[in-house]
Length: 257
Image (cartoon, rainbow, N blue to C red; front, side):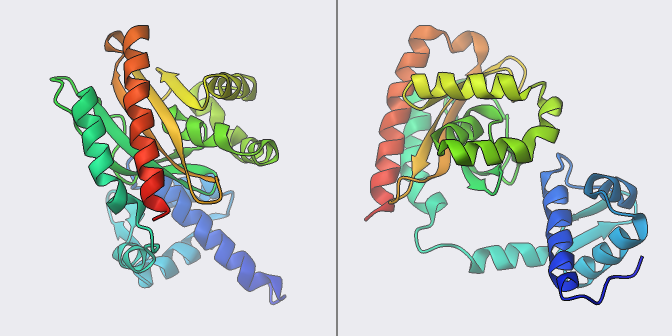
């Protein structure tokens, strides 16, 4: 199906290309076949193939004949150039290491990207069993896991409604419903912004998260601590929450210097 010559066509093409990049970035394996990508984007195969071929030629995607498409090297190069003046990953490292040392557990930094959270950093603690629930670059819908739930819960109600409408088709994959997600948001707010996820993001894992806010008090990221469930009993959750709060407060202070 040829593209329309109307003024809307270039913008529509850019939107479709961005959608394909997000789909591939959100894939657990980050290697998808043409037929899978076309179905997930609700595009016919010829249109998807044309867009994918152009993205590959621009080095925004790379294609393995056997494994399929993955993100290309130009995205990494552009990402380096696009780092903000306040590099959250860089300024948070000391506080994240201190949190990992004080809790002994795996610590994660996730940032908000549209209606998703993206893992920016993970640091292991000293406890013998570490929970590798995420790797750097992993993407999940807002509300999924302790980090995504902390960010979503800290947003304004109107923004939460928009976000839930956007991610609702993906909730079933996480064994969630809109009702359950809204209940989790209410519980997180009742705890003063402390999000607790028990088994939603990863089986037999308990994670505790809190949003990181910028100068305008907008939730832009979250820190969460994850451990095996039987280690995260109520008394320990309270201790981890105190260490987590110290960490987030330190990062927020560093952001406004």
